[in-house]
Image 1 (cartoon, rainbow, N blue to C red):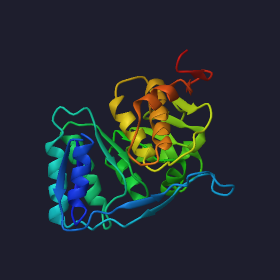
Image 2: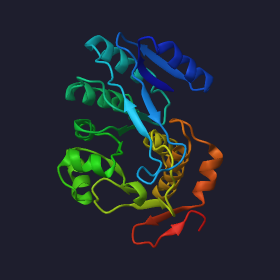
Image 3: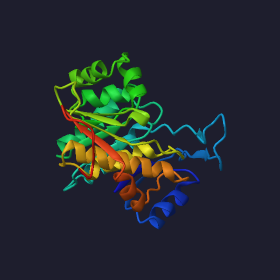
Image 4: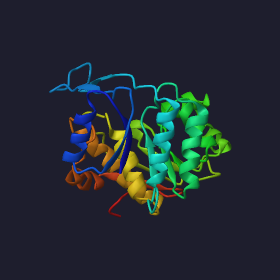
Length: 266
């Protein structure tokens, strides 16, 4: 179930798009306008851009205390019997540490594990609130913790209170770190990179991590790599073809601690 603050002239179109996709949603009405992103995807890869799209992001709307409170209560009210809640995307302008940690803690106190994919200070706030899983990319981890060293960055989040940490590192793939360890429990990557529109690939990765809760890390990361790569192949963000996921899964290389790389078929 998607939960989102939605307002402005694009609100009806947003709701209709979710309904057409068959995506259950509970939309929280707010005064601010829903932001949109425009992705310009080249038809053919050029010598300088490699086919990488240009994305124009509008700023999000500021939420009032009343609107933020309604968003939190709505999300908490939907946690019954849910295996996980995912907080993903950019935070509304003006979001404070108290607001964000309050959201994470309210969800966890309701008995639902919380996965977080945000950047900037929100990454540290998620750790302080005890998020069950945090998924930064390598650059976001370095920016938030002040160190380019992967192990030191993970350790910094763990000291603040983070549980599992999954770090994405571009073509190098993913690495999963369990509480108290700066050595990865598992790694996964594609045998060769795919090219397309990466917008939404991180959200696809979060979806894969959510639906694979409880599985071994090697399986979870393999599904996450395949799902994220499948999103890149689509010109429109938010679209994943299950057949692409199946085909890409055969190309994923996984590595457990002290193991050598192997394919998911081994």
